[in-house]
Length: 126
Image (tube, one colour):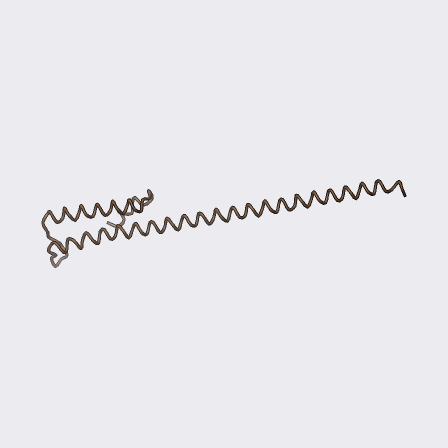
């Protein structure tokens, strides 16, 4: 019996150590996977947030540029004479003033909602 105690103890100790090592590695891997999943979710959330912000900026820029165009024509109707066919006749000084105001407004819009991907929006509104 004494001869079996040392081998049995050695086997039990090896099983306990092996099981402990396996458990530690298993939970370490689970923790790593969970951390990676959280990082991926945060990255995805940040991308969606950036896309939402860009959409909102683009919409705000389009509205601003559209308002510039609307204000331009409202000014010309107020200071000119509109014919039945929709043509507006006015002195050159009114056209020049309206053009300058419109360009200043466009510059302000671009400054306020600056984003290089929005450069061609004004071309689409004209």
